[in-house]
Image (tube, rainbow, N blue to C red; front, side):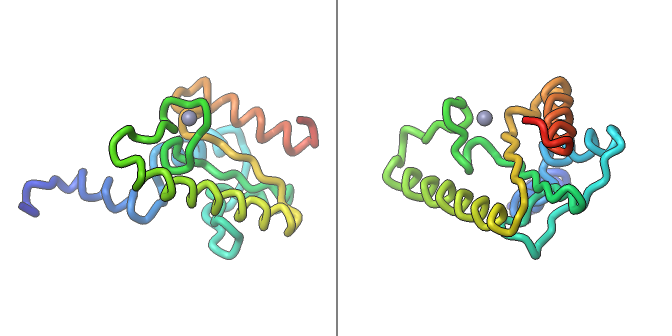
Length: 141
Ligand SMILES: [Zn+2]
């Protein structure tokens, strides 16, 4: 059974388990890098372990998967119709935890920019987020 899983699949599974280096984050990071922005990744000492951290600007970027973090009004954030009793509380817990982590970061003086996975599905979407980050730096909204 184990042999049926390819190396590629296995590494994909592993990255999902570790919760790091998943595709959307990597795409965003390389775009930010190309735009000449410099940042730190996965600061484990900060609440919620933000995916991208701009230390000097005190801006933390959180990339969130639409399903696990329940992106509202997004098809990716729909709760499965089967096993609702299982999914509903589980996903609600994730959302609550996210809100707590964001609040903790803000109380430490960080600005938090939430990026949904669906927003960086396309290169145009990624470019849009890069612009948002730059606007955040200059204090614009
Ligand atoms: Zn979404």
